[in-house]
Amino acid sequence: MRKSIITSVLASVLLSGCGSGGSDRSDSGSGSSSTPTTKYTLQFVQLVEEVEGSATSCTLFDITGQSVGMQTYARLASDVRVKTYDADGNFNKDLSDLVSNTGVLNITESDIDNGGYISIINSESSSSTEYEVLSIQKELLGDIMIAVERNQGVNSSCYKENPVTVNTGFASVYATDTGVDAYAFSSSQSEFTAGTHASKEVSALNNEDVLVRAYHNDKLVDYAFVSTLTVAERGDQKPLSGFAFSSYNWSINQTLTGQLFGLSVRLNQGNYSYPWLDATFDTVTGDTTGFARVYRGTSWSYSAEGKTNFDWNFKHNEALSATLDVQLPTELTLTDNDPEISNFVFQAQGIDSTLTRLQRSSYYIEVSDNGKTNKLNHVIYSEVASGDDVIIPNLGLANLDDPMRAINLTIAVLSADKLTSDFKKFFMYENAASDLVSVVLTPTDTVKNNKTKNTGSYTLLNR
Image (cartoon, rainbow, N blue to C red; front, side, top):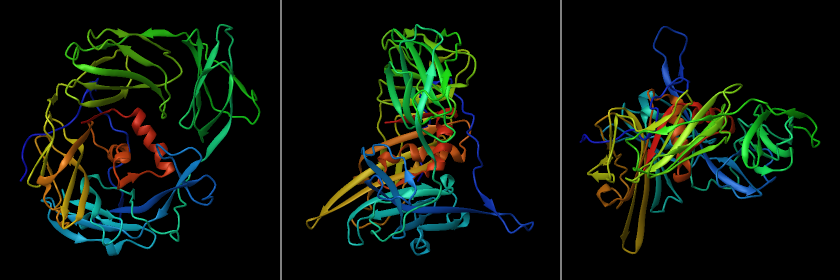
């Protein structure tokens, strides 16, 4: 059933991909000489948004798009449908009854065939004909948390593990150069644009520095990383670095000149995505504008994001080296074609590569039958070798078992030299906002994920 075509990687700069660390599986054994059995723990939850202060004993989650004055916590989800499928997409096992009353499913690698899938089938009730399904190939499994939409009831216990500490206080600096006239403050929890105050109340994760950027006449001239937050304003003032800035010049490879609708290059420092400066360029000529960079006292990486004239959105993350020449990797071919489905095969038209990739494939089906509407949103995460396509699990849902009726096909890809477990979790979480049933991160895992996201070498692509 497999067809050759498809996929991989994307567009950007200085290709390559060193991994982000971590082992690809968590093995456990009895201490004997026999081969350890690989085990996975899946924790199911329902994310709930309520007014701040209403869930004081629960672990709070940092969710993109959360409303002001609200907080998000997780109810343990035991009312979950879980099934497995083999590499050809055929039904294998129903694991629903193995989910504990605390929403935990413990499985071993033998519970799923190589190349097979575990699918979480979500609906509002047992009688509902509207489904959201998340299918994850065995090769992407690990110890992960999955959020479902189905209401678990107000009596369900909340998740209380893996919290992180958020500190709030004043970050303060002082300038030895009287030419500084504005300061901007940034952390993973706070973002303040340039203003005249050299001391600002901010929030930051435990062990996270706050970046303070200093400006003169709107030009970046100095900076400091502040590690101590104080109760009082100007309680512990840190001097600006005093490092001399130089102009970092960069270029766009001539193969991309005139082919981009947009591109930004952003410098990051450390494990957090501190905004440094966005580089600019002319989309027609490819002429670039140099940006300020200091060469001492910090480790830099960059993110290059843009859109090709074939409608492919791309992002590349890499350690910043002495030179930067934005270009497409030679392994990658992009065309102006949308993905297609043939029988139970998802074909990623429009992209081809010699590299193995992680792929998110999604489609939507809506069928009316005797006045009742049947709906299916299906998201599939898989590891796809060069030239291969994605087999769609046959979910066997009434009136929704024909993928040829699918519309709204989308595709996202991650490519790196080594597809580590950290990259796999990062990729699935990166698309969580679009997935109704989604991989979510505990607060402590979010900190680890930031390191993968901001210091790893990888490329992302979606259309």
